[in-house]
Each structure stands twice: as C-alpha cells, then as structure tokens.
Length: 424
Image (cartoon, rainbow, N blue to C red):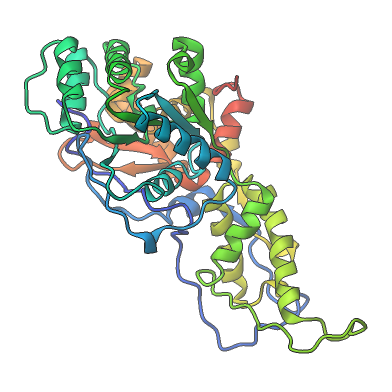
C-alpha cells in the first residue's frame, strides 16, 4: 500500500517571505508610550506556539507534471542570491547550446530553495517548456523509479527496462525540469538504493535532451556526496544558505506593511545642527537596521522565524513604530523542549529532518520498532511543537510528520551539536 499517496498534508510551498501568524491587534492607545511605562512583552516564544501558526490544508499525491505559468506580479526579489542565479542561468544556456549537464541547488530547509527556483523560472523566456516537479513517494525499485519519471512526461507505457525508459524520455519534447525536493527520495528502505541508481542513470543519459535541475537539502546532499559520490555527476552545484544580516535587513523592510508598520515621510527641512528634531524616517530606518542584528542572533538567518519573532514582539506591545521597540523587548525562542529530548527522540528527529518527513510506518521500518512505538515517538515530538502532524483519516500508520518549518535551523543546529547530523 502506498503510504503517502492518499494521506493528508500541509502545503508549505508559499514563498518564504510570507509569515503565517495571526493578524496584528489594533489599538486606540498611543504607540508612543515609553518603554518604562509599557507592559513588558513575554520574552519567550514556545516551540508549540510556533507550530500552531501553521494551518492544515492540502492533500498528498504522486509525482505530477506541472506546467509553469509565469505571473510576474507575484514574484518577490531574491536577497543575496544574484551569483547563484547567474550560475544556474549559465547552466541552462549551456544546455541550449547542446552542452547539457546535470545541475543541483542545495539549501537547508527554510532557506528559500523553492523561492529561488521560482525566480529562475521567471528569468526564462516564456516560450520555453518548464516543469516544476515534486516527489511525495520515494520509489523502492527500478520499476517504480521509471514509472515516476514516465509520469513527468505523461508516458502511459508500462515500465519495462531502463534502456527503453531512456529511449522514450529522449524522444519527448525538450524541457527544463526542476525537482526541488530530492531529499524525499532518500528513504532508508529495501530497494531504495537501486531506485536511486536507476533515476540517476536515466537523468545522466537524458541530460542532453532535457535540462535537469535538482534541488536538495544541504545535509542530505552531504550524505549523498560522502556515501554515493553524487558530486561526480553534477557539473554545476549551487549552494544556498540562510540570510545574512544585510539580506535580513532588506527582508524586514519589504514586509513592514505585513507587520503593521508604516514608515513616516522624510522631513522636508533638515539642518546639520538639528539635533533636537531628527528625521523620523531616518530614525525608523536605523531601528530596522538594529532589529535585523538582534533577529539575526535569534533566528540565525532563518527568514520565517525572523519575521515571526518580530511580528509577535510587535503584536504583544501593540506598537506601530519600530523605534519604540527595544532589543530587550524582542521575544526569544524557548528551546527547552528541544534541550530535554532523549537519544531516541533525537535520532527520530534527525531521520525526519533528512527525509523531509516520515510516516509512522516508514519510521517503524527505519528504526526496526513497532508501529505503536513509532506512533508514540512521533506524536510526542509533535506535542513539543517540533513536528507538524499531517493526519490520514483512512489509516493512522500513514500519518505524516515533518519538522516545523520555522524551526528547521534551530533543530538542525541542535542535531549537529549532538552528533545526529553531520557536516562535511
């Protein structure tokens, strides 16, 4: 039985500039109260409170072909990714010149890989045939791997041999194909290795006809590099990371309206010795700069977490100017629940991280434990706010769990520090 195709999941495909939290409260009181007389904001945000900001929506399905429609009004700018964008565009141009090679983009969860791919698509001529693909079910045999790729091209033939598959795919109209979640293929179950080898072989043998660009989570890519020497097969590999402080400063500026903040107009008159009446706009811009430094420390450059922390801090004090928010009033993330986990829970969290999510059934197979034990472990982690549960009404073993998106950086750092994830 397919453990993923009929369950339910949360869709986290929105661009990373969105901050899915409650609407800012409106107040008739003055926003210029002094910090001394203001009620202090709660200085800790629990992991569970962060997890509760994610709504339930969507349904899981098999890998499907998705033609990309360009909507230029919906694209948001890249922040500090200009060189990476140039590298991928150069790889696409080489493919157009009949010099096609495989390309890869690696990024830690929550660093904006899907957003980056969206920008690449917008930079291509509209006449190009572009597909954006997602894997929700990891193939466990060569036949399943071939069937997955067939579905990309709407090929209805029953999978036969890898030779036939390569011939059929090479006979399809040329396409630029993005697969932005290769980490979901890394399922530690019998047959998965052979399925990966089959997929890799087909991609290599069709790279001249089709431009394959693979997206993969950073730690998964490092595992593939150390265990399977995957870097030998990709000519262009672009590595993305979380935002640096200047990029985070720009991100905050772009989302002031969502935060309920309106910048004042610049003063019409300003003299060099006017120390009593500083330009209100300059004051607010300076505040944004200072808050970006504080949020850089709290979020470690994770855009969703940074926006969430700032929005909750503003919300709790009902302010409309960032200059009235001090660094000491900025809410921090309470990681006590993460710090108290035992070894078994940390191992479970690490496997869920590198797989991009696991069902109860897959977790029980990976750890060779009972379904009941697997269920209790995953539900415990969910109750701590570390996992988002995606419940299947038909069969509880297909309940699907993934790391809370805003906490991916926090979780990864903790797992690395406890030797459950490894950096090369």
